[in-house]
Length: 98
Image (cartoon, rainbow, N blue to C red):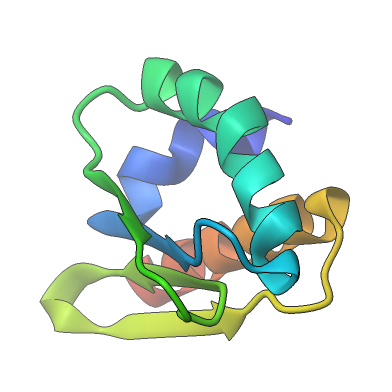
């Protein structure tokens, strides 16, 4: 999972949105609890924003150079699927830099 340390090279900001209590956001909450520390340790200067709001649909947003943003809806995804989605967003960032 070397791509985890490339977050700050390929992204300008990572935002994770979810509801604190909704069953639809349970995998996203677990993802944050299990991965935030590792991601932040590997990318200390990358802003990783966690946004909790009642009724919010779980989403993952990446901001790249020049204000380009990509978002993925996470409802119904498992924690490993969310991790794979994040990896895909990192690859998009690498492709945009090329």
